[in-house]
Length: 271
DNA sequence: CAACAGGTTTGTA
DNA sequence: TACAAACCTGTT
Image (cartoon, rainbow, N blue to C red; front, side, top):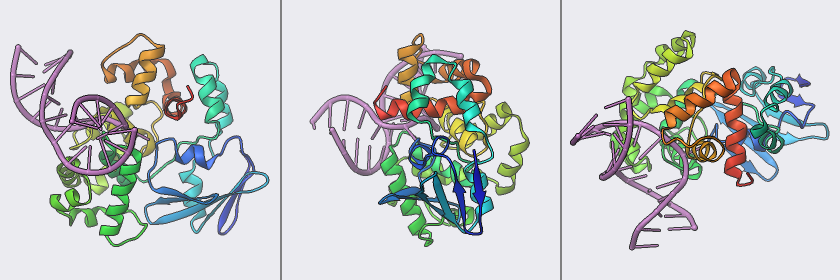
């Protein structure tokens, strides 16, 4: 995909391999909003806004290097889609969500966000994350580890975390900032085991953290939508871990990408 | 009002 | 290892 970096923006010359709606609304991130035709995205203490142009899109931001990596601009999604198109089940999902890209978000932010996401809907997840940001007096910046450590379980309840409040409280005390970065060197299965030890992190959340935080594409997060899809198009199973395993065996190192196209399509209700 | 929402944890065979 | 049931909160 062609793009060019400037001091305060990145110009993308494609509408096929980059679509802000597809990217932001395919369930991988919660810190974004749409203002008219402009999308705003937030990661850590950084912000970008995306505007459509004649040739493609313009990402306006003050840290071009960060968002080049964040939006995974160096990866050739045309090639990925071409490979995945050989799977018949993916053809319509790819036509529908052609502009999806898998973000490389901050690991700590992803862990916290997806603990909150458990058995929860996007609208409420966003509400809770915004409340957390407000509570830590940062407006749009994602709270740092030490700032969240300063909050009590009761604080989390009041912010609407519900029964995830004690889970997040405990997880924050299990997390070692240096360690979660060092985990990047571990192979996916070992890293997954580490994540599963965190309070509030089960198989699905662990796979989301692996995919959106650690950029592991050899995982297949199975949520209710993928679960429904699988039981409709493959031989029905009631065990989500087995479903995830089977799907990874089918899609291999492209699993993470396949999951996003399928999820986005399935949840759109277009199937 | 019961069921469900982009699951995890805990308790019981 | 497998399977229920409980769990915050908001919407249908």
